[in-house]
Length: 371
Image 1 (cartoon, one colour):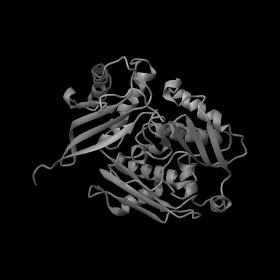
Image 2 (cartoon, helix red, strand yellow):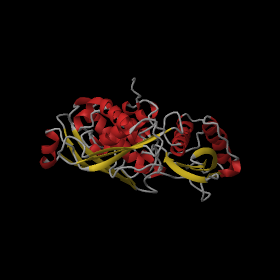
Image 3 (cartoon, one colour):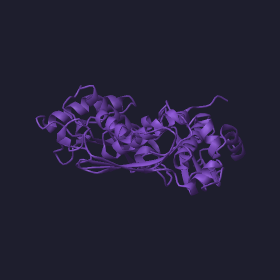
Image 4 (cartoon, rainbow, N blue to C red):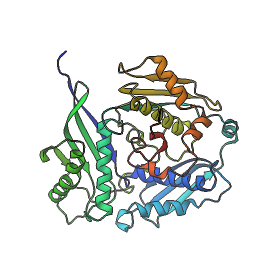
């Protein structure tokens, strides 16, 4: 069999991207509820546009939540502290939040799933975090861009931004970087050539060399239209849950039908996806396979998944029975079993809402169990 070469591309977005602003506001609200009421129910979505923010959804808790205050704190934290963005701390906020539907609550009260749906988890050996390389590099670049802005190392950068990384594979093994695309708004007084030089030397090279890759500067594109000075929701509206691929595996692996942010862990869109990643990562980490996809499906009101399957893409090192027995001992994938095993009733969700939900050691679903 000859050498098969292909390119795979994934993207990430900065924390100040309009969709991510909304994800972070929704998850900040969730964290506030769980901080005082671990059994609170939350399903909140946020919409951001030109000098306007809308918060809507369901919240059931005994704790009083100041939705506007939480939203304004996140807007300010993310760098939207100037009127030029037409989206700032003082913008009008409309709130449309009510308690959870009693018809949904009936199922959740009996420890059933808060919704139906399918979830996927994935792991492979391309990176130390057992994540695909393209999305790993893309997240590292957006995080680095934000660090350069927040520390004022590049004080001319403004909030918002994106990255895109194209990885070259030979026979499914990553062997190089074909191109990197960055987009970030900046001060009008700074030339694009200056921005490109700084991002290449302070972001692209450090990130890629950490993974033993290089990229000629000619293969870097910064702000493809040539001009980007003002970012944020005034330029492009944002909405909670619109970056499902960014949040998961960068398109490299299948993902479920539901978004994560703004949802408490009884919503299996979120907790089921975390359980699936936990299983997949541990299968690969313990040498049972080099690549694993875990598939789960739930029904609203039902405690246990209706589907629980593992695909190893012909990379299994152990038998199907050994892998199934390992999974059964690793975690109970019922709704309560997942919540308890992964400690999901804690206020840890705001930090998930930028740079991806997977491949980050600080999260409980990323932990590798001892055998």
